[in-house]
Length: 251
Length: 243
Image (cartoon, rainbow over all chains, first blue to last red; front, side, top):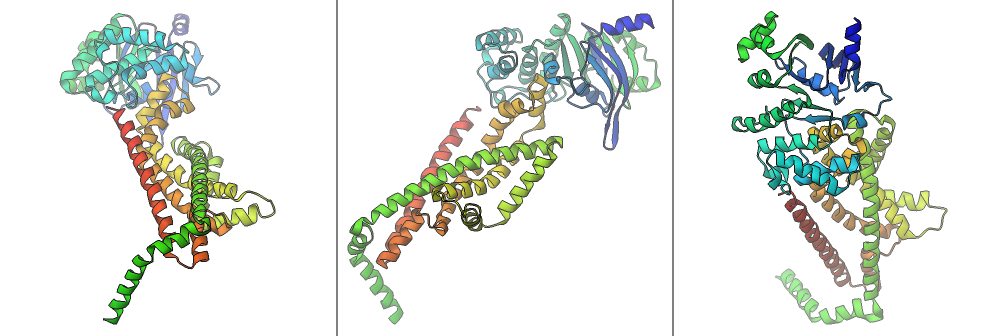
């Protein structure tokens, strides 16, 4: 009990009793999890299992019905908490990229740091260009999102989140909307991030990638966490019958 | 046969008398000044009414779409709905008359100001629904992307949603302003001497309706065509900025 408490105080994100009820659907039925600095948590499960809802609750894009989420020690579900401050520290990458189509790539990347963190344009631009260089898209800085391929858009979306210097990155099925040949370029950016010890929570259907990159894998079904393990254990030795049949279908 | 020849005579007479008629309607007694001053009043009223309409329309649109998206601002949304229903459900002439004779009935006030208020309030209702449809047409992912970066609701609106929404509704907004320009022609009901009233005054002085009313029509048409041209140009420039 004591060790557990010690552990939970140092957790970057601590979720307790998280429930989310939509009008006619109980999407989450009580989630407890600690996510620590440097964790790469992959969340898998059948569609409708609540995994995306869980991820979206972490930065309050969905408002939880019940439960608490401590992020860096602050209860962000408390209505007195200014969520906008904490969201700056939680980068989010969407399935549909959601780049701002009316801005150039550079503007997409610099608007957050400039407006929210009061950085000068030069400062924000230098950081954006450094990150663009890393994902191999520095030459597209002045292009508009509609001129890019899906894979390029998603890499830009990752960079946009990184420009805010987040403490955790949330990925909501980042490769599900991509043509198959573009999945690799996005995964390789994510792999680099994981190697740099970025804390990540990833909802995905890419099982092979989860096996390779994850530090922990979580299996969700019916709005609860059914199983959680290190990747080898998770894929080689699934305990619940539900996970066994799920893995049999997707692998 | 007789009928045709009567028409023919009229046409002939018209062309023979065109110089005289022009002199009578526009040159004599400096009647052209009515037209010039009237056009000035029409443009002045339209310009300021557009500004009032945009301000009102944006506020109402943001309140209404915020309510649609989040369910908050119930009371303000109710007020806005009331405003939209009343303004869109009654003729603009009636609104103008009520504002002039009832609301400002006991105050001495410039008629131009009354017209600006009346047409601005009227236009605001239409602008509001145009802008709201633009806001609602933006994918909710855009909103989430803005919020997830850490922007608050207003910042997300200003930096992310409104610029895109505005681009989408620019043709409809332009059209609304053209409609507004033409609608100000009823300002004569409160004896404001706008362009239409100017033509009507000349008509009543000269007893020759064709020339002054035709002139008024041609001037409206020219202004509308100029406006359409400018709006098209702006639209093209905004569209180019996306590719």
